[in-house]
Structure formats: structure tokens, C-alpha cells
Image (tube, rainbow, N blue to C red):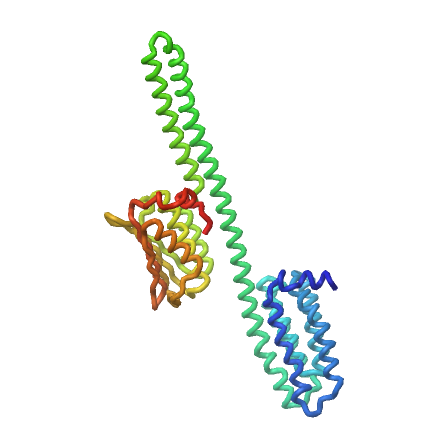
Length: 379
């Protein structure tokens, strides 16, 4: 019992499955509103609930044949309960809601049809007299397909989002591997050539130091220059590796939006951006896409990158329900970052959301810590 409580505690599975238990109140309608109800009907309700609750949580955690067994047991509980309590049709509704959880889409549709047929069949053999029988079974006839399909589509959406996250993680992993290989090749070519040159010039300086100290000094000065240039190039290569890049973020945004049923289009020249601008706009785009998917209800999203003599602008818009007037933590953090860079963020829209970011072409790097400049700060 302790293991069961620990496994299905709200801390582990959330409160939503517990909230759905409120529909068990239907079991109390008959004894409360039927003047001919008998005292033993209340203990029967208690037994039905005690049998159902562990079965409900267990079935929701199963897949395949074990999940089907749980659904069958819940339906059997509904059939038996209907012999003494008309509210037992609620068990068929629970079975329909769990169909999408325990099986894949096609099988779940078949299960919903089977549960609806079982409700119909049970109504023919119910001891409830007419016309009360109609009132007892009509809600189940309506709610079994309604709740069943709503929950099925919600479960399928969650599964698709999970697959999308896995695909994005895999793409990012592959991109990281490819970037590492590129960096390794670049460093090999860069350091191989440079270190060879430094070695040759150092050997030459060592030979010239006694007879021609001026020439030796010139060679060592050249070695210093080459080493500084090499250090700068290595830092640039490593910085490029640390940053995901705006183009990669655009690809992720397109994949995420289209998976959520939102078309995405982009217009602009990414080559206008330097490393700091790419890092900042990548965070802005990521937060905007998250808001579009979660809150907007949009079917189209458009992003445009443009510039003039003094500034760079990124505008993101959609055809959703618009801006509610309150910025979340994500947008507030982005706005603070943009402000520190000397830029501005505008958020508006009654018919769809419109987010516009603008900042100077020469961004004020010295106002920020190094981690922010490199786009490494946690958002």
C-alpha cells in the first residue's frame, strides 16, 4: 500500500488525475434524489469507489495488453455497478478517457467505439425503468465519445511534442558533433601551420642571437605577433563553437512551429549579425516561438530581420489572439538583455502578436559580463 501511494502521489504524477476523480460524485445522485433509495446503497458506493481508484491509477500507468486489461476491468465495474446505481455509467466515461493513454491512436479509436457499444448494450439490460433509463444513459452516450476523443487528441499532441523534443535534441547533438569536427579540423590546420612557423623562426632567432642580435630580435617580435594572432583566431573558433547560431535557431523554430500546426516564414540576411547579436536574437526567437506555440492559437508566424545605417531590427508576428498585456518572466528577461545592449523591445497587437526588437549595429559589449557577451548566460 505504501508503494502504491508513493508511486501515484501528486508529487510524482501531478494533481490532474486527482482532479478528474470529482466526477465520481455522479454515483451519489441516485441515493440522494431517489425517494425509494435504501440505506445499503451508500456502502455499495463506497465499495465501488474503493475498487475503482486503485484500478484507475494503475490503468493510467500501463500500456499495451495490461492497459487493455485495466480498461476491461473498469468497464466491468460499470456493468456491475449499473445493477444497483445508475451513476455507474461514469465508469464508462473514465474508460473512454483512458483509452488514448493505454494505446496508440488507431487502437484507441477502436476502444472508444467498443466502449460506446458497451454502453448501448448495457442500457438494454439495465434494471432501471423507463424513462429514467434514458436519463441515466444519455450522459454516457454523449460524454464517452466527447471526452474520449478530446483526451485522445491531447495525448497524441503530448506524444508528438515529446517526439519533437527528442528530434530537436538529436539534431542539436548531431550539430554539436559536426561543429566539433569542424573546430578540430580548423584548429589542426591553424595550429599546425602556425606552430611550425613559430618553431622555424625560434630556431632561426637562436642561431642569430650571437652574431646578429637585431635580426634575432626581429624574428622573436614576429613570433610574438604570430602567437597573438593565433590566440585570437583560436578564441574566435571556440566562441563560434559555444554559440548555437541564429540559422540553427531558425531551423529549430520552423520545426517546432510546423509540428504544432503553425506555418513559419523568415525574411532577412543573417550575415548582417555579429556573434553577440546572433546570440541575443537566438534567445529572443526561442522565447517568441515558445509563446506562439503555448498561448497564441495562431496558424501563421512570420519573422523579418532588417537593418539600416544605425540599427538592426528583428520583427516577429503571428495571426493569433494577440498580446494579453502582461510580459512573462521569459520576455522580461529578454527585454532586460536588450536594454543592456542599448536596444528596445516593443510588444503589441490586438489582432495577433507583434514583437519588435531593435538595437544599435555596434552593441555595447562593455556593459555586459563576459558570459552575456558570449550568449552563455542562463535565461
